[in-house]
Length: 176
Length: 263
Image (tube, rainbow over all chains, first blue to last red; front, side):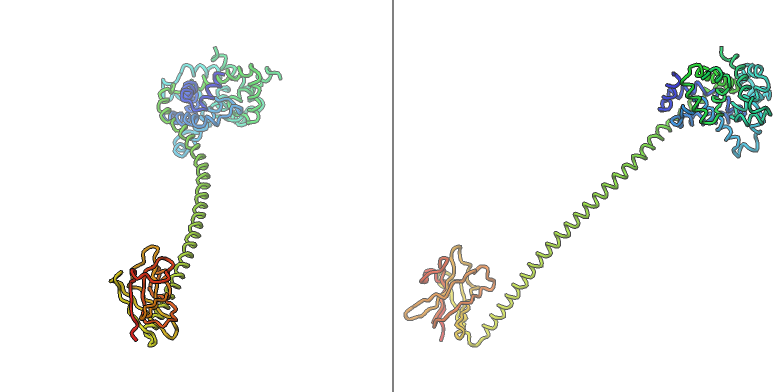
């Protein structure tokens, strides 16, 4: 209920509500963007655009169609993927489909130390290879069940339940 | 509905991911409102996913909030301008109506003014016609006067100013054949209010005056030439100032002009 009130205030153009929303979601969306972009400066830029879009388009958010988090998650994913597909990115950067969020650890990348390395590593360890891939495709990249099933070469009918198991593992360690 | 089975199906995770078709999303949203356990489940899934994605973030991006906030003012302004636009349309509509009305009134007024000026022109035309007629009359009179002056049968009798008005003078033009006498009274002063000039035909011995008539409308007659019938065998002519309507006998104290016919 608190959440609903906050979102309705945001839709009314209340700046305090916007700040609170930023506090609640900015880190998560930053992670989504970064997992796709893999460049800190560009990710920051996109994050700003995403929150401006959230601010401007909040009145068009329809709670009947889904969660607020899902709505802003979509905005972040689309903005990132759009950027990846843009001209300036195409040549120099890697393909979005070939990497998983968990690779950020393995690549020992340029942002060393900044990432919540311990936390992330903990999740990666818990999830195991299949869950990492499944969550990456469905959650971080917004693939459909069918696309994910093809990508991972698993039966379509198992995607939902496998994913459910993966999230349960995650929740067991997140929710105290 | 069996909420446990529904939760266990794994559809709620896909719901939070946003990878389901819209129709399915709407159904789940309804369940969410109806069943608190489903709502709790969704909130926990969401929480876990936020934790996971937050862990991927290079850092907590608090430092970006300020620069984002500086760009926020755009939205209320955008709404305002949208509202303004709709207002603009409304105003345009009203403005068009007002302009149309003003235009109609303008045309109406123009028409009225044209009619007025047409009426004025008509009046002026009538006045001009009257003046032309007057001028023709005057010209006619003048021509006739010239004819009279040139007529060999007409006798001119100068009438000298008398004691009552030494500066005054007049003349009588007598057409004996037509029994008409013309009095040129240009040299007489305008008669005072309530008085009128009366013309007398005179016989000398003994002095017998016979009234020939009054110079009516003296002031308004421009030529001051008056035509009077005269059947008398006149030996002289006199002009006296008499009360309005004339007198039986001339008032000699107010004899203005007098002249004798030289035979």
